[in-house]
Image 1 (tube, helix red, strand yellow):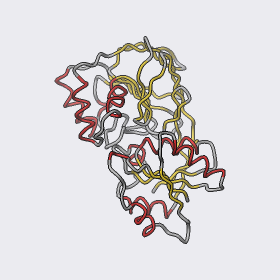
Image 2: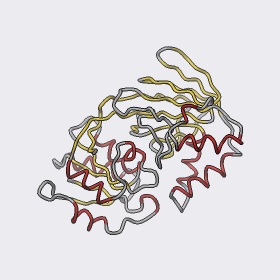
Image 3: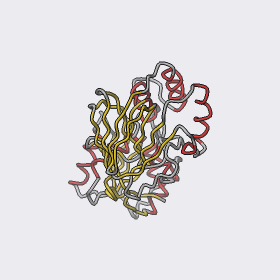
Image 4: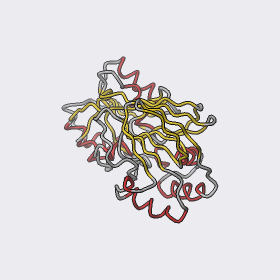
Length: 287
């Protein structure tokens, strides 16, 4: 079993991970191999190499970005993804009920219940938890530039960017028609949350073959705390400012190129975005 470690996931070095793996992993089942990432995209390279070496089970040690890199090498293959969540948000791990504590996450791996889950693509880039545009994509880009990571830094970035942000107008085309909306943000949710138990799509099912498209309309500034509470209490879908569509695919057009995020990782893409669901395309270890 290959363990791929992002040594600075979440902004903190992961001292002692090797000793915990050595102590907790059932070596009657698995011979652990540990490799460290050295640059963006390296986890994908290491996972793909593992498959060529006959290693089928690959564990991502890190946050959603590391999980994304490992997972994209394993989609539509016999490979199996394991997760030891050590990142800032850990959205996919939390959705799958994988414990945040390292020793307990390894216990899940020892029992190796493997299920097949859906994944999404945005302009052919895979994502497993959420992708999006608008305010959260802007925040993701600004957050990635910070020296200090973690939940507190993320909240500070949200507050700083909120008052200068200008919502955009979007055209969304589904199989059943077209919707034009001005939106504060649009999230394409395969799983239910961004991370840190912030539930943008509380009813999203990672095995239903559908994406939950959540559109948050511009709202008065004084409602931001209330919406924040709803986000963390799994009730954001009760807001009058949120619309939810469930679909296998959607095309989104905006006025110009701009920021997007997939699994929290920032990127820039064009004015036309094609988002699709790929049913049961990734094998993953979960409780």
